[in-house]
Image (cartoon, rainbow, N blue to C red; front, side, top):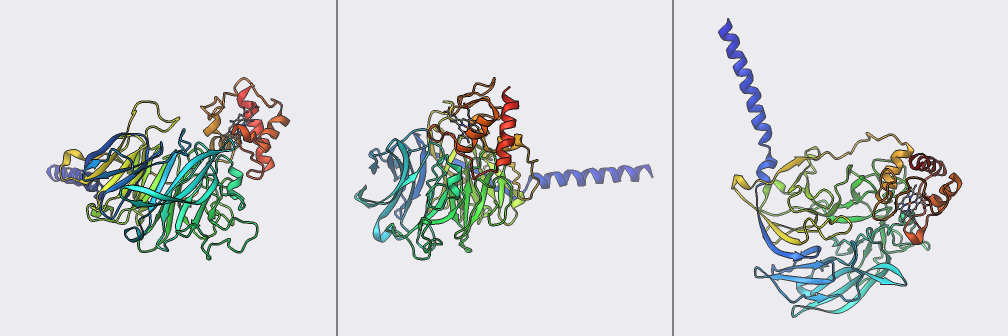
Amino acid sequence: MRKAFTYLVIIMLLAFASGFIYKSNTKNQQVLSFKIDTLAENLTVPWQITFLPDRSMLFTERTGKVRHYRNGKLQEKPVLIVNDIKAESKTGLLGMVIHPDFAKNHLIYIAHNYGENNALWLRVVRYEYKNDTLLNPKTLIEKIPAARNHTGCRLVFGPDKKLYITTGDADQPVRAQDLKTFNGKILRLNDDGSIPSDNPFIKSDTARKEIWSYGHRNPQGLAFQPGTNKLYETEHGPTGGDEVNIIEKGANYGWPVIHHQDAKAGMKSPIFEYTPSIGPSEALFYVGKAFPTLQGNLLVGCLRGESILNIPLDKPSEQEVFLKKQFGRIRSVVVGPDGFIYISTSNFDLPESKGERPYDMILRLRPSTDKTVFASSQQITANNKSDLVKNTSQNMFKQLCASCHGDKLQGTEAVRSLIGGKFNYGSDKKSIVKTITDGVVAKGMPAWNGAISKKDIDGLADYILSATH
Ligand code: HEC
């Protein structure tokens, strides 16, 4: 009797143990066996990597250079130096894409910031690639409002051969809802810069006809899903609240009226939302032979999260991040013609850059059977059902204001501390309500009128008073 019981216990223990082994041996661990090659280093924010049909690689550096990596070597002479550029904080030469018929027409598109009339803007320029240089620039669109942190800038061509361009809200949240401005939009153009006749606002007299979707804060990832041709987008949220959206023609994605997991009729909520922030940058559907288990997954380069997010869309509860904190902030993620994954780091970004990694790199990830080079992976939870935090003024402040003011109003690089009641624009409630409503736009304080209700502004003013005194 006793013996039988002992056996039973042993069998139970074995079952438990083997369950454990099975669990830690998920499909993902086999995927995450990489060999990592450093292709180029000592770079300054290589923002976009792209491949040419001859299998060589071009990439932008934020300071204004387009660089060429060919035959296993970074070419010393840049393919292009953009002089008319405003490169500070996170702006400069950012997006780049080649024409889907590049082999025939040699066209390349870049997006860069520039200064004019004391303001920061974004323009998209088309070049011809010839004899290792970029020639015949043609500006396709310009005067897109920009700001140090919110300037969008991802360029992709769709299966429809149209050019899609993301723009940031340029620190003017309310304008993301305004169809007369380019702030916080996804734009869609023909390859020559003209406006496609099937754009959603083509017949509107009051909207910019270039607009494809609106209500965005700072979208930096765009990827068409092979097979379905659905357009997936990643977007930086205000404080957490980072998003993955599916973009539909003419749709409103809600910023700043809704954010995080809010929902409202006529506005789209994200399919996945991430709090705390992961800082989603480039998004990409993996297609290639090198990593069979990643096939069809959405990969997202993460800045704040210092990792790559892997989303198996058929099993979104099995999302995970890998390469966490191994190379710092990750900006560009692309698949090479060999099916390997190429990534760039973004460690020169201010103010995040703390000088711990005073360099940027382009890395190549190859599969490896060597168990010792497993890259660590970690489960991550995306919020896609409403387990909303309570809608208190304090939470609202955390979500909308803390990125500039600090969560306890202690200040950040952008704004000085308001603790102790040190206000410039009046410390009585009426003045605070007025500042929040109208903003101090020239100094970087957005006007919130129209984005949040009068009642919410009132609540925010009360919260600010209680937190600073
Ligand atoms: C994009 C950055 C940014 C965001 C987001 C932001 N602010 Fe500000 N805010 C500023 C800046 C910059 C100033 C300082 C302007 C100055 O000193 O001239 C400021 C000033 C203020 C002031 C006036 C302080 C004074 O000295 O009188 C109040 C009140 C305030 N913000 C409230 C808010 C609230 C409430 C929110 C969220 C709903 C918010 N801010 C979101 C940048 C921001």
